[in-house]
Length: 303
Picture 1 (cartoon, rainbow, N blue to C red):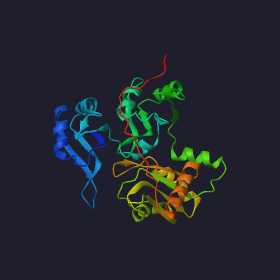
Picture 2: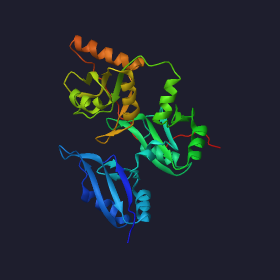
Picture 3: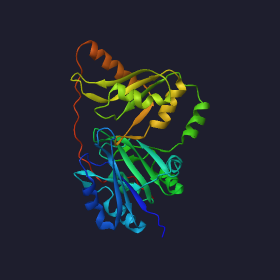
Picture 4: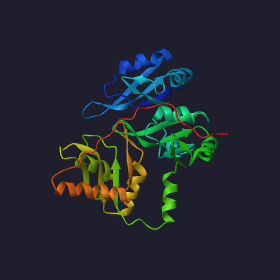
């Protein structure tokens, strides 16, 4: 008898989570066919995500409802339906990009707020060093609901900050827009949210598939610790743009990359400041204050 398994994607997992832990966590929702915790082929270490295969869709739906953003080893799990077909992921139907979020807003807070409008397929606030980075993605089942959310909340204050909400744009749409604009003159890209063990050699190996690379630089502090961002200079502008289009928002070792053309003033100043500090033999130390996460957003009137 043929049957189709219902598969859930479980992301943002703690590095020490194991298959037995996942079995124990998800088994109350219903019979599990199999679990695959994805690991690095070389080191065997967890990549921070797994796939849970249920025999019955109703059990997978129950697990999604019960366990999304539930803590496992102190970290909230991000659960959504697995989409094996990459073409479905790239269509962008119902998918929104939200910028300028208050740093107190995490994935669970965003999900709780936006789910008031309709059923959510996926929701994620991108984190930098385990803290919300101020932007994220919400994908609804319905394109109409996404349109309504953009209409109601774009430019409105959420927790005291005016957010910018845009529709997700496919690679083809972005390329069409580029063709109608002034050609890019810069071939350098900026990559943020890298692993701490990422070095220039590894970064070049990942990005060289897009075209010849003339320079790769991962930025370090004076103690030799990675600051988790870097720059890549391509020989051709079109190769740089293709790298941005394909790698921005992609998960690498459980972390979502932020990739863009390195042409805004803040990024240029950051690089110049780093070079200046290297010449003068010191690096300024930046102190970060921890923000207590809250799962409640202050919303404007939605009526």
